[in-house]
Image (cartoon, rainbow, N blue to C red; front, side, top):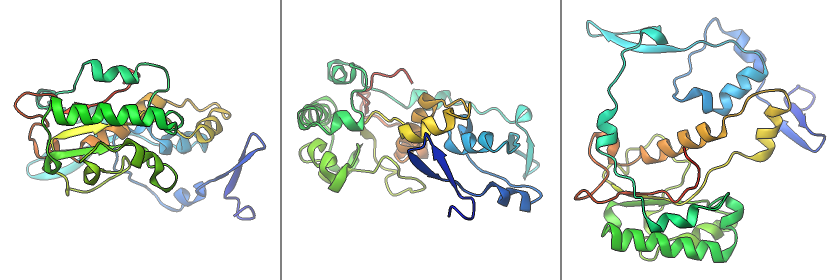
Length: 241
């Protein structure tokens, strides 16, 4: 990989596997279907290698779909998403107030994990009267699933859905969610881009990751992710994202 030019160095201490950017020059055009691009590692990679890109949108006219400049896109009303989403705000969120709470390092301490486990169980059992069939929760897995096993709310072990899950409709009937993790980028990857003057928007990245996970639920079907107007989503995080 080094001989082929696919490795880059960070701070003389870590090797970063770099997808060969010359590949993009083999095509006249490359289309990437995505969202919240400014918060993605792929954007940092393009900026690092000075790969030019522009934003387009898909617009439907006369029953045909066309690519148009993003400024000419059809602006969709997303207010219905807010109306169908109810996020819990209460004392159970206090656990996420201190800086870096619910990070991987914080969760690796058994005492912290046990506190979060009890708070999540309280939320699911007492606040929303959740059932196994309507619940999803996630956290860091940790080595050999150690963190996940310490955090899992009692009786809801089978409702775990990995926080990196993508492209599945299998859980589109779930509406009681618990997001038990505070996402941070890999510090080596973040500092690697920053050493080249690339602006990294970690909060935007964390928000995009959260949205992807929540979108596995029945909100993707246009149905509310709440029950009887009770809170659905437990996000004990201290960052204002």
